[in-house]
Length: 449
Ligand SMILES: [Ca+2]
Image (cartoon, rainbow, N blue to C red; front, side):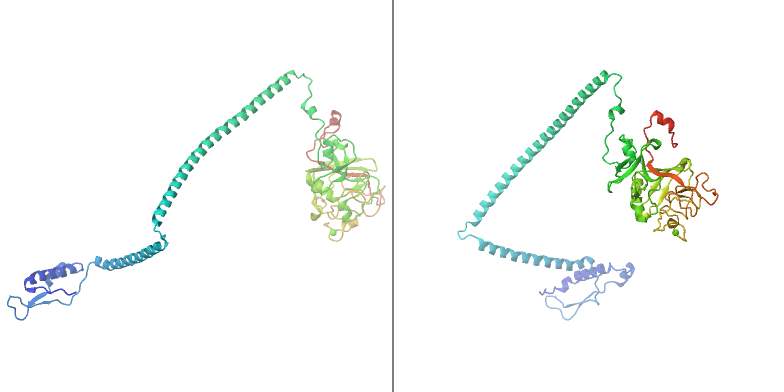
């Protein structure tokens, strides 16, 4: 579009001033000092050129030096605004097109009779009224549920109170009856201890002390189950020695059973429980695992001397650990032969048999040399599974041996060695308390036979 040129004669001074003002205003945004701008003055010139017309209008020339304009930064945003306007325009255009498509579709769906709008309106109104109705019904149901919930809470509280009151009243009645009976009871009422006897039958008897507790007092064989996960087995119970309740692990009395046996024999046990026997390392392990046990060893020589050794702890490990022996502190009269010295100590030693060398003797098998299965060191200060000799014997000391026995280590004339007439090993729970009568109490003080 073309704009007609103004009449420069009339507007010259005003245009000049405006052009100057604009130029100076634009340059005001530069860093140039104020005084230099003043000195430079206005570079724009209006000059008359050529002949003037009759009306006095003269040709005018506007001279502008090479123009450098620095416009306000806000003007730069105009471009962005224009872009946005264009984007909005595009959106409006696309919306307008889709609106037209909508209308066309609506026209296609309209029923031929032209009742569509009215039918749809009626349908919408109907649905709206249904929604309203359902909504109000829901509100009513919610109120009802709330009310019922409150009533339920009340009911449960009432019921619990009733039950409590009932129990309280019954307890009060029972207390009254008990008190009244207690008042009527004469002084010779049976004591609680007497009421409780006979004792409750055990379902499982772990060892002989459990049979003792239920009143069994005869020394004989009983079936025990030290560990319910393993099968039960027969044992011989000593119900007499030191109050009774002892489970016997080993017995020697006449030489009727051979004790020079294999690992397997010592593992499972051998002999006759009523005569001579080794109960078996697996069984001994189970018995000593199930309860904390003490060990008692009774010995009698051919001179009729009877002595004993008591260990306040006794445990035999399982086969995987080679039936390792664990004994506690010694007490007794026969001497501590299981722990004779630093070099002869059977405690914490593995079990060795003639066919299984677990001893601490590097040059040979103590079990083979001493004809026995035992917790050999290198080799022995005690061996209760040695050969049974009916009298003094010569040669290798492979008889029943207890190194701390009085006179045992004294050399006999002719190199004869002493043996034992009887030997017995038995265990009992450490915390077992035999029910000793007054007669027994005088005979058996703690730890003494
Ligand atoms: Ca060896």
